[in-house]
Image (cartoon, rainbow, N blue to C red):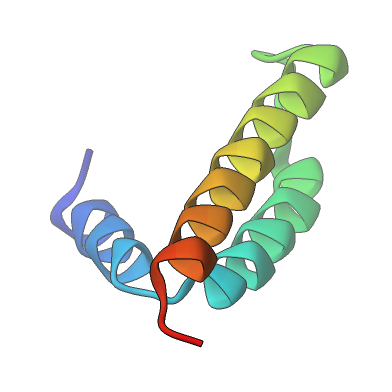
Length: 68
């Protein structure tokens, strides 16, 4: 992976959960534009679902540990 790609991932990791969701959604929308067939559409959907479930767990964890 290029340095630019690594920086992008580091920046993504530093975002709040809600912003990660927005960025991931946009990246997935854009991925369909350059989709070259390496992944089957079902695999892409499964990967997206996996990531959104992970973000849901992180968000729930942050919410439960924050003072009210």
